[in-house]
Length: 170
Image (spheres, rainbow, N blue to C red):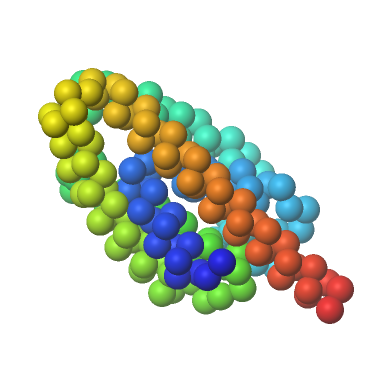
């Protein structure tokens, strides 16, 4: 898996759910024994209790997203959070694959921004055109973000494990 592609995909998913992607990455990094060889972003995500904290935030976001009083994900503060989550995901993806994190972080932020706008418009369009309740569309969006995010982060973990094995065993 290429770092830029992973950063773009994870960033786009972060545009849908801010905390889901960092939580998935943190959970995956928990699965490794020695994480200190990857880099500062992955080290932070792998810190003790980080996965639990991010999972709580992700679960709260999944619930809050269904509430009628929630603002649009495209509002300035919400979009900033999504862009930061995309940047974090991009940097982590790069570190997990042994690459420099700056460009993938920028790609992750940009695709989170674009993904947030696209998901917002798509969700509104589906509700209007297909006459589907918002709750159904929101749950489908959750399933897509979690399913694809789980698959991508699993592939990243495999790539990281291969790099670590190569480093350890030459």
